Image (cartoon, rainbow, N blue to C red; front, top):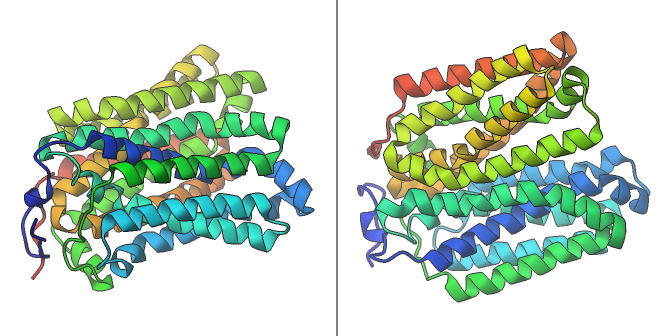
Length: 402
């Protein structure tokens, strides 16, 4: 199989004649293992802090370390591994996942705990960057949206299971053993990937300069900006969903947990349904999801005090957002097929920045106008994103800049 250069058109020659669904499932398992490990500290923070004799704020830096390193890795990994077989790189990320969880489980103090989370950040940022580019090489072009929806179902599954299961098991067997279980999951992932992932020679000529070249292509910068707005609007909403339910809807802890479970299940279903939507129209899906979420945000501002209405609208939000990562990854594979890894790094960095911006902007709005102000602001951002996509985003390939 010949490699494509930067100036080549769509990477059609990289797509196999038959889909490698077992390898796609291995990618989904990798996503599940990585995101589960990413989410675990949120449910185990109190126990971790008490055992290590540190504050909960200090223990929370385990999450910060992973996010910061993940963002940096997403920008650098394609250039750093440009001559390495993609199968080897993905297997290395699974090895890092295992070592990260073992190191965290055995950590006697905060520095070693943070080191373990740094290793996870490298694996997480690197895997996310390459996930779309690798998935598009595992199935024929027409089946890429379906394959991406399967790959990203690992995120939704982790969203549903990681926090509640981690918290439950942490109370029974201790937080360190929960991370050891996560290491075992990483080992299973490694075995499955060894058995199913084909060799994939690196394509293109990825260097740090390539990031700027890709961003300069027609429509790419606009697309990245629109994606950042969508994720910013979502995380402004999601970060403060609990205080909204407690203060505006007026429900207790058990109901909050039930509503969040409903959100997670709906998110999982949305991820699975994304493939069908994208087969019909990528552009309509890109516009419809933030438009729906923006409208739901307005509905929550107006009817959020009614528990059943709030629960249904939050579940609908989860269903809509489930399609968002799949849709933007599909846009990436169609718009920049010859540099999907570099574009993936830019998208992952944009999403990480959006998470930080959404949480920070939401906090500012919370202090100024209360939690309903957060949801109103989130809706405004999402509706602006939908308008931006409608006006300027196309799914055609962006020509390489000479």
